[in-house]
Structures are given as structure tokens and as C-alpha cells.
Image (tube, rainbow, N blue to C red; front, side, top):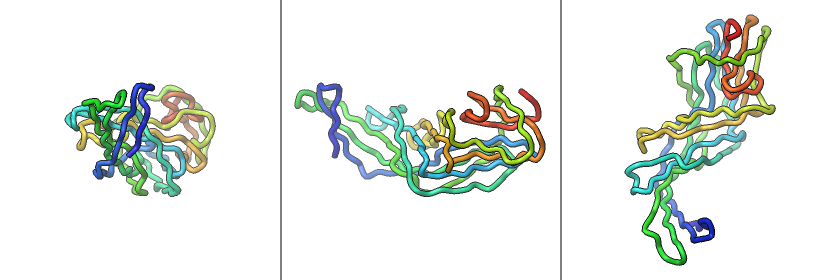
Length: 214
């Protein structure tokens, strides 16, 4: 049981209901050329953030209500592949029920929330069948391994990254910061271009390879 102040007018008490569910969350995507391969080295100790869902009608409908970060000391190096794919980790969610009190009186309004609690250590990858995204901020790259690691720049984010629709009717967001332990690699054997979606590839959240400057 926990009590949180609500704007100085009252407080909220929340208690775990005992319900849990394990969901897959996307923490990266890669878009290599067919003559190249890509992979992700992932550390659970890096900052990963997953969406929270809340319902005020006894679980009939949910909406996204923020995020919560998790970190655990584990990791996985995904194998190299030459096709577009997403990288996923398994996240344990716990359900909480909250009651709202104002000026010492119970307020009729209650809520139920699903919150990310921990990463289980489970990993998976999913082949992407749609076309490559049209990223427009490109830089030429020479032969050899190219990676996006820890510097100033954008986190990887996906608004529908946590696969929750089958449970609550909506998917939730996922986000992962790049770090020394969480890098995206391309082993381009020929000179070509790397392109970012929201910045140049050295700082972009998502990166794809291209045969020419897009």
C-alpha cells in the first residue's frame, strides 16, 4: 500500500491486485541492405522505458498515462541478420488498484493501472515485412562495422512498442537509450550511406542503410 499526494488537496492509495502479465516490448529496429548484416547488443542495465496504462471504468477501457523505467543487470547479443527486423525484450507488468481521498473523505473514483515492473531476461526478434522507412538525414559510410552507441542524441522510441492490445485493447510506448552496452551495428562490406529518421545517423533514434543519399 502506498499513499501519494494529489496537488495538496488529498492523496491516493494504491495496492497491487496480484495480477501480472508478461508482454513483449520492442527496444530496437534495424534496416540493413541485403549485402550487409545488422545486430543489436543489449544491456538491461541501460535505461529502458515502457508505457503505463490506466482505467477509470473498472478495466473496461484503458489509456496510456505515462511511462516507467526499468533496469536489470543482464544482456543479450542478437545474432547478425541481413533482413529488416525488430528486437524485443520481455517485460513483467503488475496491476495496481488506486483509491482517491480528498480532505479525509473517500472519493468514488478509483483506477486500475498496469505498470512495467521488471525485465524477465526474455528476448526475441521479429522479421519486418514492410518496406524500409524513408529516412532523409544521411551520411556516407566506408567499409567496416558501423555502430550507434553512447553520445548525445535521440533515444530509440516506438509509440506502439509494448504489445498489450490483446489484454487492454491498446499497445503502449517503449523507449531505449543508446549506451556502451546497447549498440546497434551494421557490418557494411561496401561503401554506402547510413540514414537517420530524426537526426544524422550518429545521433538518430532509428537508422537504416541506403545505396545512395536519400
